[in-house]
Length: 333
Image 1: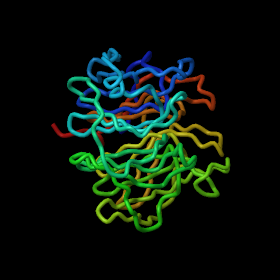
Image 2: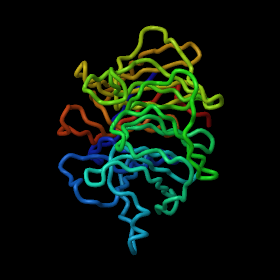
Image 3: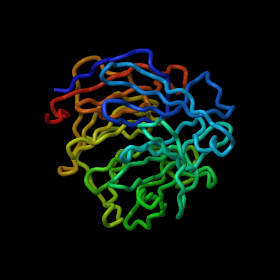
Image 4: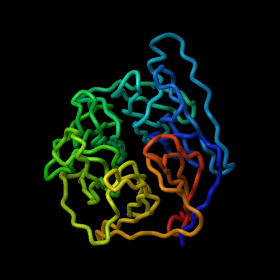
């Protein structure tokens, strides 16, 4: 049985932030908060949620001595991504109202809480926001997003080999996923499962004819090929700015928003890659209100969910922290 629990109210109000679970803690980076100044460059803020004590802590700003050191700390942004590899969190992309979108790779040491910018080579992806990033072995995969320079949606796949710090643009075979942003991409085994996001009916450029796909697209990282799948009904509604995670070989999605339906969601769905079928889950307890642009992280046998907004205007921002727990998520002791 799945059950929602409310753990804490009064945490940071954020949307389009990025969060990573490290042990029993959740590190949350940046994001947008209505009423804050995004015209002035300032360091990205880092909030840490302790899932044992159920307390938030904001890390102090990093001391920067000189211009070069200051460049190693990312500026405040939203629409970025963060992933964990060993003891390092890699933050990439996102945008700021002053600087626009960014394509600098930043690294955060989870032990020393220090930032640095690794030296990279290869084909660096163009600056963007609303992309996805996920990790397989020692590689980070970037897919989609809205590219600032081209002023269009993307459906490219970029790979960062973190052992050599080399970027590459993958020459993918097969029929690719549509150009999109604010989708989810989740690794299960050696495959990347892409769901949802905002696309345009007429191609990569934004013409305000938005579509919200509810079909799964699968990319095989071993063959560099897009695979065709046909899911069994019922299917969740198409959406963007939802949350997604994997557990025990299955994909879960929560929340999101569909502008064509003018609807926010607070539903929880499970996708089984073996049966290619979706199942709607109805947890017990009082769950989160319908929302988009939230974060969720798996910590042990719980999913920690926080942030997001539930209106078209960013005036009702959420600062409660929820978890959903089930025997299905329980890890062996």
